[in-house]
Image (cartoon, rainbow, N blue to C red; front, side, top):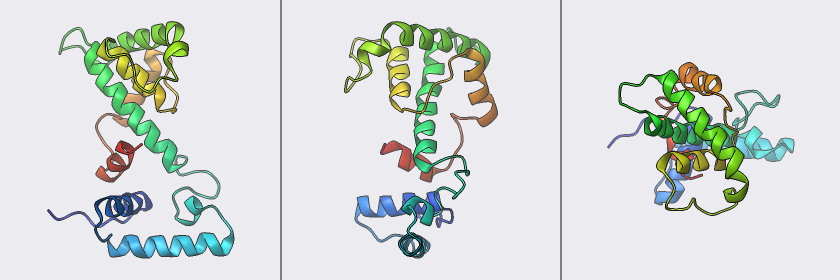
Length: 173
């Protein structure tokens, strides 16, 4: 299977990680990017993340790669929870967001403080509650209202897009 040649910093980071994990050579573009970024960070006494162009010096670029990956993982759990809370398969996005927001509010009010530091959720929990717990554990914040959930999924298609490279990295968090 032929892979796309990584060209963006996130793609090259994922390629490097996958190469190290699978004990295979990384792409030439990745090797050159990492070498230049590491040398830049060392010579300028700057954070490695900045030298590798994973975040802009001004803090732009959507925040750190770590935060973007945590949000991606959180959104994947929320997207699965949206499917679980639907009363039927024909339910639209808004009714699902309303039901999920109610589940999130109920969970945060009554159980999050008790279960937040556990290694895993109790096995007897319903799937929706487990997914909310997993989303909260991503440490990327959670929309607190149906309107907030709707905005996340409507504006970004959070459950549907992003590169395979980001997915690879997010799965290792």
